Length: 203
Image (cartoon, rainbow, N blue to C red; front, side, top):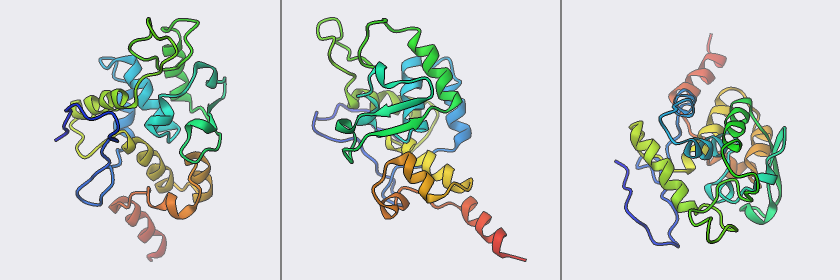
């Protein structure tokens, strides 16, 4: 059961799963269903889509500027990333479609991709990461997804990419992890992955 209580400003969003101490990964079929669900606010779906397809941390996602969104790539500025290094990510077609729809709804002079709620009085502000995470929590609750947080999206795409045969080196380029060891801690083990492995070695 997700708890949507107000949290202190300094507190980070929970990533706890009682099974393994990490946020649960979400199946890509459910991600697609959510992104296609027009009953959900467009901004919330775009936040989810960016976090998923770029393996972005919520703090990185809310600090994106409109100018960071190119035709083919999206850029996380180094000052906004955990590793303090610029990360350029190819924009997946489903995310491109969402972004194009969303960009058509915001003011042409808007600086931040996700503007703060007090944009009229302070147009330089971006959406607070806790507010953004609560938007995602609302979606997770709507879909009955337990033990999920904003970090579930990052973990989900890395796990899915690994299960579908992506190399650790390629996945590391997407995630921005400094080491393969730290990356592997994000990849969820599953019966599906183990079954695929056993099929490869069985006769």
